[in-house]
Length: 113
Image: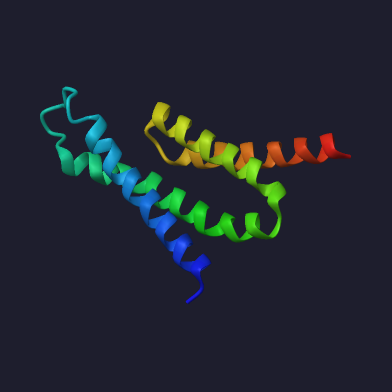
């Protein structure tokens, strides 16, 4: 097995785990509504974890092939995380991160030309 595949699997697994674990840790000391326990928070975080895992798996080979894609991909991750933190929905953050990726890519192409 290639070490790149192993590192990619470990990176995706770690990111997926952290997106499921951190919401439980961050909200552990805050007051929660009576009907919402750790299971509810865990289920809410599955959407963002799966989107980020898919983003990592689909973008790492492209970044390894073309290093210019690193900055737009990081911008997509940042927009995804921040907008999910604000909205607690996965639909709008996914669309915003795709828009951020596209705009960053276009801006980089205009700057380098």
